[in-house]
Amino acid sequence: MSLEKVREIFCDVTGLDADEVEEDSELDELGVDPILAKELARKLSVFSGRAVESSRILESENFIGLVRYIRSILDIGNDKETPSRKQAHIEPTANQGVTGAKDPRSAATNDTLPASVIQEAFSSTKKITDELIVDGHMGNYCGEVMPRSTELCIAYLVEAFEQLGCNIQSAKSGDKLKRVPYLPKYDKFMDLFYELLREQALIEMDGSEIVRASQNCPTKSAAELLEDLLQDEPSHAPEFNLVQVTGPSLAECLSGKQDGIALIFGTAQGRQRVSDLYALSPINRVWIQQLAYFLEELVKRVPQNGQPLRIMELGAGTGGTTSTVIPVLARLGVPIVYTMTDISASLVAAAKRKYREYPFMQFKVVDVESQPDPELLRSQHIILSTACIHATRSLPISLKNIYSMLRPDGFVMLLEQTQQIPWVDFVFGLLEGWWLFEDGRRHALAPVTHWEKVMKQVGFGHVDWTAGERPEAGLQRLIIGYVS
Image 1: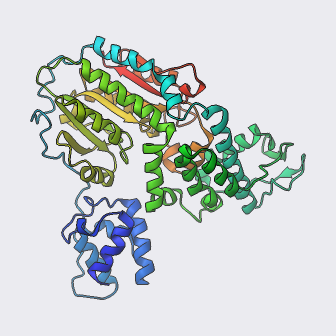
Image 2: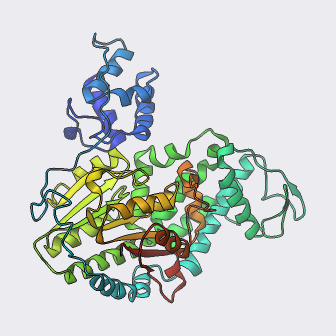
Image 3: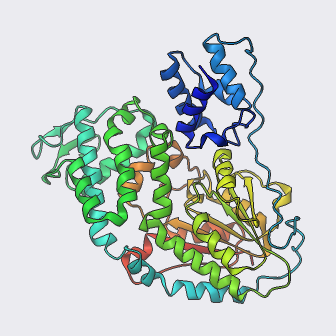
């Protein structure tokens, strides 16, 4: 197989342009992680007719190493050595930021964030919650959009159950229904959706026995409901499209024929739909815009002493928050060092390429569940995190690690979903990470009062959050925790 053909397949999987993939380009810098490696192995296996192992791809240090591995399988060429893969770690860029300050602790003794300034900015931000909800196409979400997206999930569930031998559609009220077979790792996921079917009066449950209840199943197929939703509520298309990624393959996932992670993140289309959800969908955009508004209000009020304001974003992922916040901060023209982080080296590498025009940005691989590097301790004025911390095993451990990275005058700002939404569980419940919590939670998502309790337990002084009169105001919240 020619180098150019391998490059063509590689670019198709990663979404990179051919001129970005040099022979000596390191695979981790190109965004190859275990998930991408699986998809790349699948595509290369199909084309070559030989079994390509994702583990061997990950052992290839650079692109030419990958090519040599593929050629060794095909017995082309004599070089069959595969260099060891370097540890997936991306150092912060050499960008010096607006001020040129390199040491994140150089300003640690300067009180540049008076608590009164933070409180004024957040008070102003809270007042516009309902306005942003209405302006951001979320005003009818609880009353109209969410019930219809739930119906879509129900339709996919009914269709999946039928494929697995349980025909809810044709059963009569009072008929006993057998439980569908599924992998043990989906126990919590299935408990959640049996309960949803019960809430929708499609089934009744008595211990292990399931009986058909009186409510009719959706009269339209899932495909028809999806088409109607896309036509009637186009602004919410990103979430409907993501449901469509998992819905038709639900039965295959439950039975082990398909993998949820590969389904969502293993293809360019799946990754793009996740990116669209965080970057474009009103369910996220409204509160991300509120976060950007808060930062602008805060930065305008902060006394300038020549030292940079140090902001770190944890779990930045595909950049849904970053892409909104960074232009706002750049426009303000004040000294800032913004460190974009994620646990995934591939996502950090992609962000490093995407945001190279902003000299005040740094990039680093950070696992919020692990003890922070010594250089990060007491280094940040502000730590931001959007839809990330809930997905960790222990909120106390993650929040304690965040606390240790903040300066004495700093604060954390979390954007977290604080009410369950069926379609969110329907999509992300297929991921093992959705259920990894080990801290006593009953669900990955927790009410705001739980966040307050844990944040105060780990040391945060004052905790506050956004609220409004509209029911949608409780779906997601900005939660702020002050170090002192």
